[in-house]
Image (cartoon, rainbow, N blue to C red; front, side, top):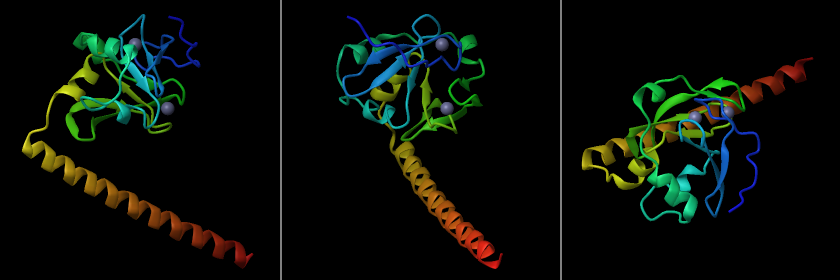
Length: 163
Ligand SMILES: [Zn+2]
Ligand SMILES: [Zn+2]
């Protein structure tokens, strides 16, 4: 099977070129020659984050990849597109799975084996409750930030009117 060339995506851990993988509804990038981590552009991981979501050979292959050694996992991660250090965050409902998110492009990097964990492990009642609270507080934070941006914009406009 021939896959299109990766559009210059490099592994945030190994800095090796990644191989484009056809996930049927989008392309992800695999660090084929290095750590076997997966790169998802903003919003793509959400299409395969639960058991039963997504299909196809590339997904099956990704789910079969065993977890990487902890010394490789411990390396610092940098988004090679934005040249920014990535944030290690708990993934949405699955706060027990740490993924790396770029604060610039919002792309995410998932270690080898993590996608399978994300998809298979059900949440306990406590985890689900905590995840709901996190979502609520994120929503509130976003609303506050939007309000601040709106206010700043108004102030800038009034400044320009004073000139
Ligand atoms: Zn890698
Ligand atoms: Zn980035």
